[in-house]
Amino acid sequence: MHKSWPMSTDMPTLLELQMQLRRAALGGDTAEIVAAIHGDGLDPAARVGIYRNHAFATLGASLQGTFPVVCRLVDERFFAYAAHEYLREHPPHSRCLVEYGADFADFLTDFEPCAALSYLADVARFEWALNIAATVREVTPLSPVALAAVPAEQAANVALRLQPSLTYLTSPWPIDAIWRANQQSEVSTIDLASGGISLEVRRSGAAVAWRRLDPASFAFRTALADGFVLAAAMAGATLQDPAFDLAAAIQHVFAEGLATAYCLSPEEEAPQ
Amino acid sequence: MTERRTIPNWSTGIGLRSPHLAEIAATRPELGFLEVHAENYMAETAALDRLLELRRDYPVSLHGVALSLGSAEELDRAHLGRFKALIGRIEPVLVSEHLAWSAIGGAYLNDLLPLPYNEESLDIFCSHVEEAQEAIGRRLLIENPSSYLRYRHSCIPEAEFLTEVARRTGCGILCDVNNIYVSARNFGFNPIAYLDALPVEATGEIHLAGHHTAEDVDILIDDHGSRVAQPVWELYAAALRSLGPVPTLIEWDTNLPALEMLLDEARHAQELAHVHRHADIA
Image (tube, rainbow over all chains, first blue to last red):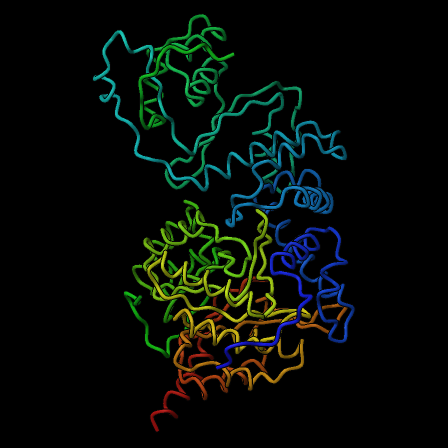
């Protein structure tokens, strides 16, 4: 076995080479990496191009798999273009591609070429919520009996931890109806003026489930999900519905298996 | 570092892709083992639940594609932790990764990118293999890559580099016969000489897959998207002659066919392995 191999003195370090190939693979400058490779009978740029094409094709396909309805709404060519622009600036950090695309909806919000499709970013938020629910397992729900240990005078200061698969999202557009209509080969007409919606998306056993919530329940559950104590969550819900029934709301949260743990917090301000 | 379960060295298996999960669960075809890409099962998906059921009936091989052992930076410890946790749940018969890199500067490029082969990359790669093996408490098999470019500053032949990695770290080698064929064609080296340079005792698995010729340039692309090509079957037979029977996997990841076609490829590999097994005994 050789103990040493010939080295040239002017060679770039491994880190330099890898940063050069990364830059080229993500659509940036290729001059440095091209200078560092053999042509072997071909234009070296063509060799680099194979890796760049692979990165854009496979990462684009991954985004398309996570956002199929967004893709359908804009068509595949436009989606590939949007995905291309997105992944140049936001390459994945996680090595699990189902976790890629957390900020794709935010990117679409500011992406000028699709500004006319005002509901598109919210459909992307909904698809991301579905993706979270499909990839995050539910944990054992908290039994309401556990709260019996809380002294009555402390009850208002209870904060509940909710299921990690949950997402609460609201939109001025009927994004769930848009999504559902795009599961069919023939898309039926959606009344975009039918009003805003508030959604709860979660894992339910092995499946993904969502439903629309009334504004007070949405305010209450969103506040809980954000870590606010019961008193603060109730204050926010009462703003939406003065007749909001706290006892019934808590009962539903437990009956649906949404709460997973609780803690006692000092008083907090109501959510805005 | 020993495997808890083992499989016979003439076993053949297939790469398990999620569109085939339900059919395999329902029909339970006869297979020596199933291999999955580790990163596809690190999230808590319904596919993971299926795999956790299948592992009761099939030996499973865990094939990592994103540890990026060749990165000049530190290993991603969070990712290594998830890899280890999955190994704990699956209890795979084999655990493998690649002689490649795929992430740098916080960006994961979703590819098995080629390394320059020199003293610096050898030291870095070996230290990462050692760290990973220590973390998972298992021996890794390291797969030879297919590649489409060579660096000017590579000065160690790939087979020699891989052999030295195995010698220094105690890792095994996953000999991808299609990758040898593809790289040999792309760079004009002799694939048989490459095979002969690999240490027989370190080789723990063989991969077979399809490739295609790029449209605009004369380069073979390892796309795992078709049947194993005839010259690759011939190279596999040569590998069996020099290595003896080794657990062999059919990989098919793009343009996924009906399950039956994969099983047919696996049967063909099995027949070849049997021929050489009996030739060995005789």
